[in-house]
Length: 122
View 1 (cartoon, rainbow, N blue to C red):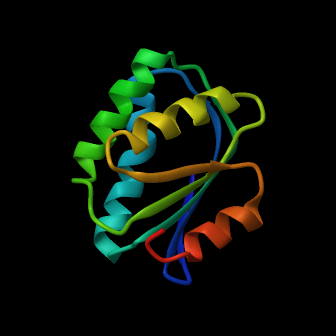
View 2 (cartoon, one colour; view 1 turned 180 degrees about the vertical axis):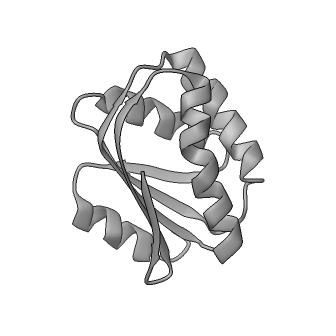
């Protein structure tokens, strides 16, 4: 996983397989730490190279856990570039995240994701 701060945004690029709750949490914890350290409000996570092997119950549990880890900071927007192999994971996680007051959206197109990140409070 590559994590860097560019133009006030956190950029994450990852590949591999995530097949368990501990693996997913190991994936997001360094991102949350970087967000807090640098007071980041915008995140672009390129997950096109990741295959997710998690069921719906795990997805809902993970969204709640991540929301609590991040302490639901106001103003953070997360745009994720979806994996073509597991788009259903991203759609299900998006629904679970939004239901927990996170501003999270999955995209197929990087330019659309960046445009959404530039929006203010919509």
